Amino acid sequence: YQTSMFGDREVKAKFLDLAEELGKLGIWIRMHYVYPYPHVADVIPLMADGKILPYLDIPFQHASPQVLKNMRRPAHGEKTLERIRGWRETCPDLAIRSTFIVGFPGETDEDFEILLDWLDEAKIDRAGCFKYEPVKGARSNDLGLEQVPQEIKEARWHRFMQRQQKISATQLAK
Image (cartoon, rainbow, N blue to C red; front, side, top):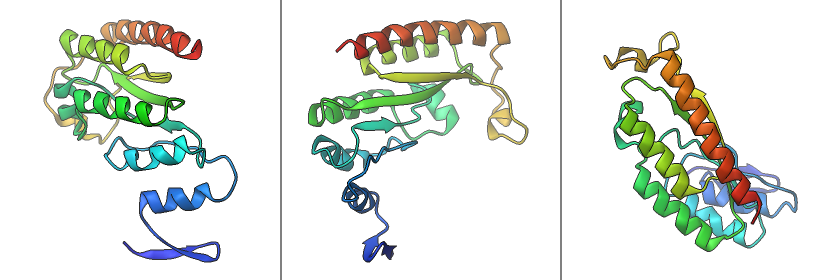
């Protein structure tokens, strides 16, 4: 890893090293849009020690292995649940926010149910959900997968949001 100057110190450009240095500033540091890779576990002890806020904004996107594969996401729903459990064991006050997509090309009813079941288990504190829309130039347009009809995307979005509202209310009541 290369080093660069951070204030009057030389710091390696590694996620943990940067988080440790930010934690020394004595101000609120919150992790936004952190990808769900293994290195996230390294900063959880900093959160447990009060050096950075116990908050993660991680775009999990989906939980179905097939949808994640189609999205070219390296995560796997079950492994992600294990990570979340480990993070919360280390830092019980951890708040997790995420974003998800429903109606991605090829998403089946079964895929969507996997996502809802995953939400129940993950107990994400706050979540937003987007209905997939084809974007000009996006690789997902060329997957050759069946497009999910708009009315199904809409119904899935409402079911997702209703489920998440219940989860959020339970999490906030703790």
